[in-house]
Length: 111
Image (cartoon, rainbow, N blue to C red; front, side, top):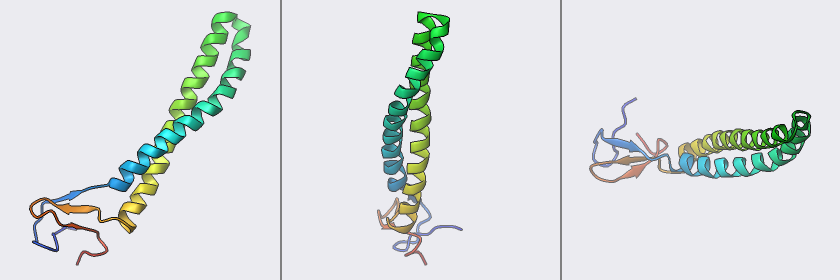
């Protein structure tokens, strides 16, 4: 489907994706915080398990658990936030902008 500006019929249309970007960023931050919180308890477990290998095992087990929890939480939060933002872009916001005339529109309002 070729998008044309409903105002000037230009084909030079830019997708804004403001909802996807914003919700993805918020989701990544929330997911990272949640991941770190969960990882702290996981780090305790990792430290206990790693203590079998002595003090270095305790340190490495704790740090690895925290880092992995933060990365996984951040990635999952970003993905969920981006999906939600994509729905907001499609259903609520004017997600397309005509570069020549600056008119913003959504597919709902597109002929």
